[in-house]
Amino acid sequence: MSVSRKEFLQMGAAAAASLALPRVARAQSVDVVVIGAGLAGLTAARTLVERGVDSVVVLEARGRVGGRTVNLDLPGGHIVEGGGEWIGPGQDDIAALAAELGVGTFPSWYAGDTTYDIGGVVSTGFLPDLHPKEGADFLRLAARLDRMAKALPITPWTAPQAAELDARTLGGWLMEHSASGFTHDVFRLITRAIVAGYPERISLLWFLWYLRSAGGLLPLILNDGGAQDLRFDGGSQRISTLMAEQLGERVRLGAPVREVVDRPGEPVLVTTRDAEFRCGRVVVAMMPADATRIRFSPELPESREALNAGWARLTRLPIVKLSVAYATPFWRPRLNGAMQSDRAPLQLVFDNSPEDGSIGVLSCFMSVAEAPAFAARAERERLVVEELARYFGPSAREVVAYVEKDWATDPWSTGCITPLGPGLLSRHGRALREPTGRVHWAGTETAERWCGFMDGAVGSGRRVAAEVQAALKG
Image (cartoon, one colour):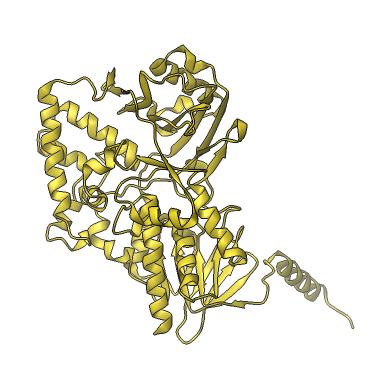
């Protein structure tokens, strides 16, 4: 049989195209597909299995579980967390989960004075050096924000003044209420530390909701007795690892989801690079910004799409969480190893040593965007040690090991902490938790309590599992 040159070229092109396409195995049928093997996704899958929905698969893009919790190895078999780490009073969902899994906790170290670097002034003590009038001004506005936060409904976008609050920033509100320079500095310290953003860029409504979901400002900013009270034996990622072990082969690593097709009258089709799954329900357990990596057909409703896209466009401080190890925790007992700053390259420093104090570890948060000189890893390591020596003395230069997690370079997370800018929550907040067709949404950003924390992620996983179970029964 003769073939013309044109036909030959067409056949060759078709063959090349077929080789370039991913090889998709025959579609597997399951009841539920969970996208994301962080705390929210694994909790959702584990809860469903416990309730009798056994046909579940969890698809995770990374080669590990844990999402925004990750353990980093130190010499001597020690670990330190590179992401979410602490829990405190009121964080009942993650505390109960850890207890079920047999993961114990131990107190963080806060004995001794804290170091402060505020407005360029370095001081140590229980509180920073301040004039009584400065302290009174901060307490006045902090108490007012607390009252406003506690008055919000659990769905803050339904508050009568939601649009007005969401049109303003926290920084703008502080200016309107004649905040002193010291009060501005302290709120800058707070927002850099807990939400990786500046008061001038953060929605006032979202900040109030963040406080509301944690029970107020004090539980958020307190260390001893607050949100940074306890640590997990073996590190926070251990919780996800143990859940994944229980789920077994239901968890698929290295499986980034490319497309979710939800057509009426047909099973939902979920496609990865090399597999397809047909299911009755899908759970997306991801940061809203990261959901933009998935193609949805039909397109998501306008509010959900706007929320995802808006979160992805937000200005945030790209965070590096790094740890410097020493032979001993030499700063004890005079200092507790904590440092808090409103403008220095290191936003936060804290004692992250193991419970027995057998080695010393200072962990730090910093943003390269604020300190370009720290951009290169080798230079960053050197300069961080010099910063620590500035706060804790020359012994800080006697480093045993250095490890870090640079969330700005993580291919599967748009950062670790996600502040929200003006205009999104009041207009599109209801889309945070509402299912879209047969797609359900989980993740700490959707939580009603402890939004942004590990506890919020676990709570969202339990909520969405109940939703899915009810929908399957229906």
